Length: 72
Image 1: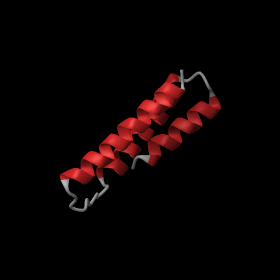
Image 2 (image 1 turned 180 degrees about the vertical axis):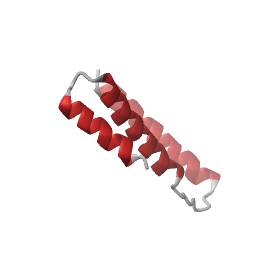
Image 3 (image 1 turned 90 degrees about the vertical axis):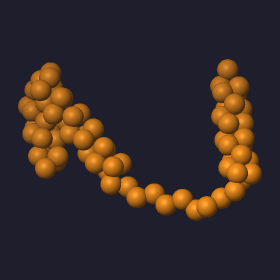
Image 4 (image 1 turned 60 degrees about the horizontal axis):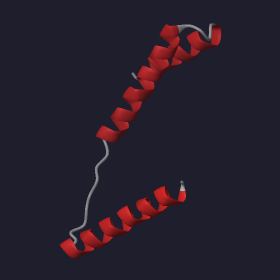
């Protein structure tokens, strides 16, 4: 059902690139499609200890800090 407005939006954009309704249909249906995919995901987490979570978080935040420092 989400792909029908997407197709109409693409047709409207190809007919007239300045058509605001075509862009709204296309982006709106793309957002609804992404939300539908995200909402239907089923994520299963293994049980891990607090020490393992802490180690992972320190490494993730440390890597992000190094990337930010390197981008200066």
